[in-house]
Length: 81
Image (cartoon, rainbow, N blue to C red; front, side):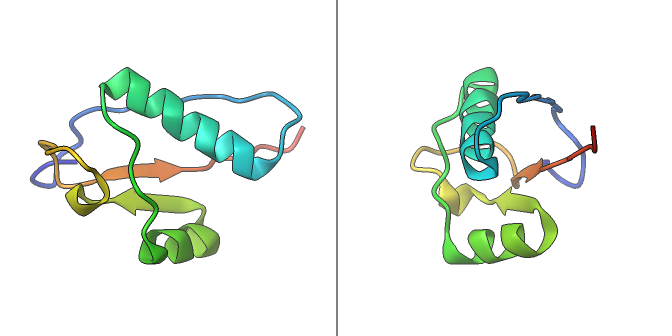
C-alpha cells in the first residue's frame, strides 16, 4: 500500500501438510521473491497483531533496505476442506 492505494496484490497457496507457522514463513518468502524485497523483520507489534487477526502489516521499519511503499500486509486465508 502506498498513499492509501493498493499498489500490488499477490496470492500464494500452500497445500503442504506442514505447520501453519512454516506455511506463513514460506509464503512471506514467496511474496518477497515476487516483489523483489528482502525478508521483513517480525517486530513484536507485528507478531501480536498476527496472533490476534491472522494478518500482519510490515512498515518500512521492518525492512533493512529502503522500500517505496507505506506497508506490506499479509493475510492468512484458511478454507475448510
